[in-house]
Image (tube, rainbow, N blue to C red; front, side, top):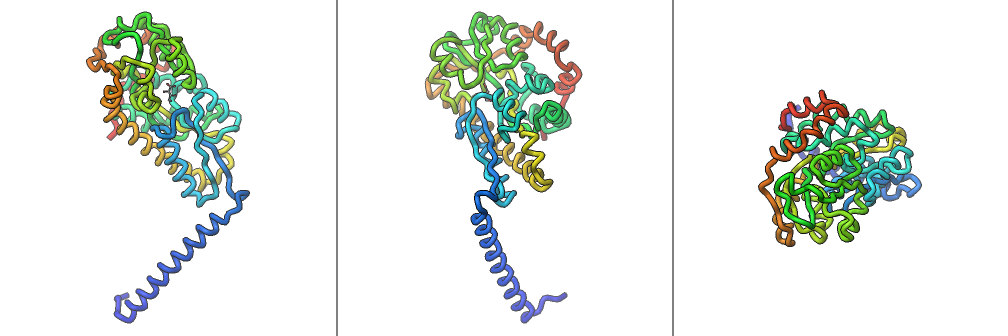
Length: 341
Ligand code: EAX
């Protein structure tokens, strides 16, 4: 059908009409949503262990904004801090919490398959890690959550972990000997530090600052983004860029919460989770680009020339145990995997 002037005018009017109609409809919709009695709105909670102004906060807020938008305000998502990741997993299993963002730290105690991701020096770099987690291997491990009374929604990122301490600069594996190191409640990590001659002390993130201040432990290990956003420079003098292990994070849902969702709401949850992943990873990349300089500016003494091969060699006894206790085939597939595009 050719476009004529009078019809164009008619068209413009129709378009104007449509545009006006669309504005009215949107306004009515917004009013309708705003007018939704609180009772019609379901409140859901997402918890994570770090400050709101962090890579986890960025992910959780992006999830909240997207899910509320995609479900037309029928849901309100409350973001809370809970720096006990194990407790969050338990709450998801019993349905007293809806969503969480956490590292895989204590997750291996609930989903043993995720322990394979916690092996030191397993991932070559961030692209390799993201490629594995966004691919078949990542999906296989997420599927394993279902068998443990949890719903693994999407992989997020904590980052490569580095060692800090208040006693001495750590350059070689020998320098770690005898240091009391706070670790997450993660047997894979604890075995690595034991093998290097350190004294690993597992504790939740909530206990870390006091333990460092009181000298219960000499050091700890975390990604740059966590060290910066929690001001660990105030209780630690030395930072060694060991990058000794990649720390995945994961958005997990309570199966009971997901079971109450319609198919459309589940689709909204997945789309919101993708928004969370993008916001989280972008924040990690940004913090990693500026964090070391920032920590130096705050007075930390930074060791950059870490001999990775020396640390891997010193960990050989631990790798032998991992080969028996973990899934050697899966670990080999991860090592062989291509980086993300
Ligand atoms: O997930 O406990 C830790 O060291 C974690 O890196 C922190 O809670 C973020």
